[in-house]
Length: 406
Image 1 (tube, helix red, strand yellow):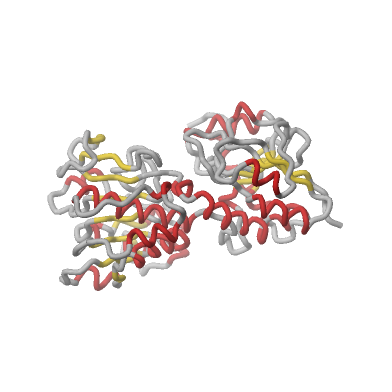
Image 2: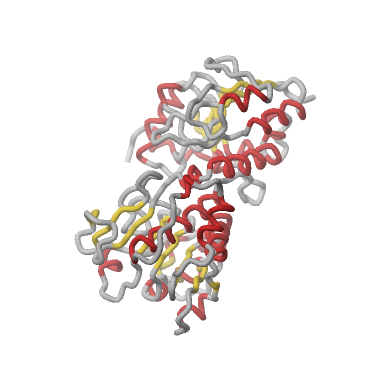
């Protein structure tokens, strides 16, 4: 027998504001129709990409007080002052990597005995993710990277992505751009890199293999996507095995510099483990042979594998300059001695309706059945960071982080 649930769609409270939604009005209606007895309530909001009226038109009640709901869903981190004690929440918490800026959020979740399900860890048995905004981050990140290149070189001007109707118009805007012999390196795979490649292909930029990328002398625009076995190598010469790399990232060293020294634009789409090698250190970026002038860091790990990512940028101000000599922010992002950095940490927010519809579809297909019915595949269990305020076994490694130690 199906479990009857009341689901509340939260108003986004993180600043800067995010316009995305976990479920569109039509998806809310479909969920109710598919699971009789399930109710959905939407907290009113003036910033969503889908207006309150669109939910009301679908017969979804607007309600400020969500105290009666069994599950509260949002997109980004929830303002800790709005958390309701004893409830079950589902959102991107950005706590499981021990992010210092969200420690107080996890502490409040624990204090209020809240059950937290994190979208990032909703996976199948093989640990492949079932919901993500990755493709959209890749699409917008690559578009912003090309936009930054055009502004830096003065060769072309692209409008802000958020001012366009969606990703199809973005592809129309990049088609036929005068990019010259621009050379682009992409690190990573999966949804993010696939999204980035969509934009580069729409711009008519040809893909080449990593091997060809290092050898070619063609005067044409090209890009190459690099996997971990290209941009890292085992420190003692062991043959690369991806499973070993994932389990023992500390045994590997950087092998990205040969590509970096042959690239004008670098688009970072990789997942990075803090134990894995740094890809571009401050010393690397200061080298006279460093060719990279624009970095579109979609992964946006601050103080992580790319030294120029000293902060996140915003949708309103997407780029900043990095001075490779001082290691600090430059006054002019397009200064010839600086590296232009795009490090927006909520890129899918620039195409909120496209991204929300895709994300909500994945939720309905892959997650809602386990939430409302039985979690037979352990999808919800694997993504539950706290249960009634206590860390689950999977996330018990966060105990010191939770307690403010270290």
